[in-house]
Length: 312
Image 1 (cartoon, one colour):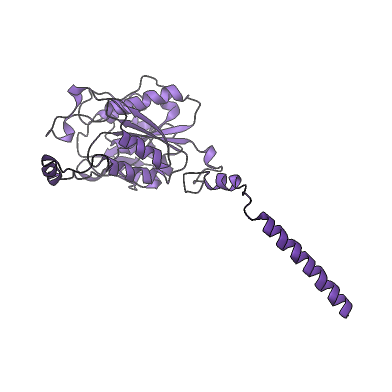
Image 2 (image 1 turned 120 degrees about the horizontal axis):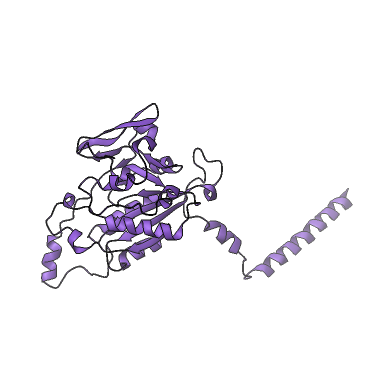
């Protein structure tokens, strides 16, 4: 019995010595961690790869192309940051950000590079006669028309009608629930839903009966063909590409900009109600208050203004 115990002890001792020697020899050796790093960096979107109604993963989802016109102003970066943080939660998404500018700005380029999103950065300048002058109200002239049309041009060059996707026009000052992106994902032609805090109402949007749009809840220019907000619809990529001339009319009457595009694509009977038959509000037409920078202006006159190299 003692002999057996001694033999077991010797075997254990020898194995331990060899294990210790191997560990010492490995100290300082480079670790082949490339596979681990690839797995850790593989996705930017920290969400489940599946959505309701989808049996596959992210690679099988129709891509949502989010088109956002933007322009230079003190709170531009703040609003784009807020929107980008929401978009990060949405799988299979491509952000098309179009600046109203003759050049692409470093501020926007830097934000996009750090966003973690798939994106395309474009720019086109609104013709001077169409731009708002200092002190003019926002509603006087349509904004973002040339920028949205530039995004449509880009899609027609880089995508084909066989590609599965949906196009959504998302202004940078609105507020979005991730639910609205799930709702629009499988749009066949044009899907619609209500928008909160718009048109002088608590919400504005389609009226639905038995799963079909039969009218619109609106109080302003009720004779519009499609009296819905820009944030209240999404268009099938295939449908857009099958109508190569469809675009927003820069000369459309006030309030008719959305109708100028939709009227070239569908009739009211074709609209696909979402958001629980248009009874849920998952997007809001919010606006950020323009910051007051009187102290900044005073310091600039004294030559002590804020460092222009700091991106705000």
